[in-house]
Image 1 (cartoon, rainbow, N blue to C red):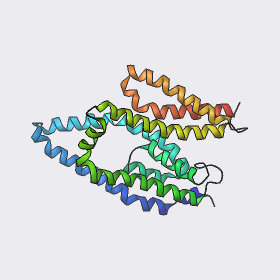
Image 2 (cartoon, one colour; image 1 turned 30 degrees about the vertical axis):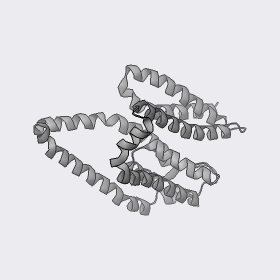
Image 3 (cartoon, rainbow, N blue to C red; image 1 turned 60 degrees about the vertical axis):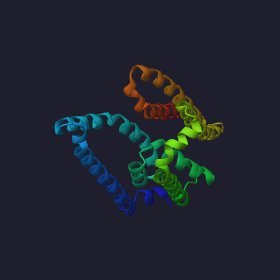
Length: 237
């Protein structure tokens, strides 16, 4: 059975719709509350609307970056689930990593050979539980975050940045090294080409972004596209 036929079924679209609609409703409520609160900041309605337009415009960059990554996620887990997850979390790399880890835990690659309906169901659980942990932590510990941050960092905010960066590098390094391992097999060199091309692209893009800060939000998506193009070109050589 092709799991994507189920992953993209109308029933699943209907199942995820309530969650997305709730998120849309929350967004509307937040906008209304923000506009109502403008008077407390001595902002006129026109000034508040102008600020809203500036914010909406500046969000286009991050949204496009997420959209590009989402295309890869949709190819692996289908449109409905990718739509729901990114409507709630909005962190495409995190959701992609969770789906990858769910597949690897069952000894298969995400969307690859042997990946079936049971693996897809496992991915939905891992992604949901991963997101639930964030929401639960936020609900229980948001008011204590400042105390915990101060205790861990000893008053040095730079340490928090170092710890967070180290954790992210470790997680992403684990995922990439597993993929490169697969690329060492005969006929799978495209995987290594994709990884190297994306890595080099990211280095170059980061340097360019120092001169063009707005490019930062696009870097991940652009690097992924370049990596995919490089792999396709290699496989057709």
